[in-house]
Image (cartoon, rainbow, N blue to C red; front, side, top):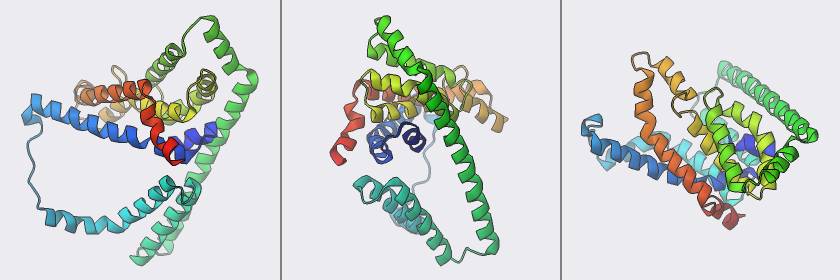
Length: 273
């Protein structure tokens, strides 16, 4: 999502990754608090599991150690500025290829499947991004963002009120669109407006990603909830909404904190870059 946002808005992808780090930690903390609240109210909903000694945990970690090191290399290199996200992708792909070769998992059929899947994925992503950029250029040349800014100014609406309306639009769109479609359709329209109103483009990227994911589980018509209901046949939609509600509240709190305290998002990008 951040990569697509960066491509659509020509924003720095490494700054977006850095900006998402602290909101991610905030989300972890709030999700843990949501779980704690649910268990406090209903202990039988989460009975304690079997305790595993630390020795066994480290033994289990050995199975994914090489993959974990590759992840740290790729993401760490982006954060410290050792290489760009594009270069990191190449390093990650090469590292994964080397690990597969070392483990003797490669043969002709596997190589063929890898190349075919890569071609399909690359072609579909390029088609989506190219079409989105065409739409973005058309919208800008048609003057829609300028017209929206003039409308906001004429209505004497404050920038924060305008942002609130934009977030409301995302919440509503989550009823019928999935996250990628929402971003491709709305960012070309809203991004120039938000920048014109004085908001930071990196900060807005994190806000868009967070509110987009919230919209997909928002009652009464969260798209992801209905997808999950279709997969899990023996649990009705109401039960799923009830189950995700504490996490929806946690996400709404996180969104409010990010919107009201932009420094949380911008601290790492400003410090690192």
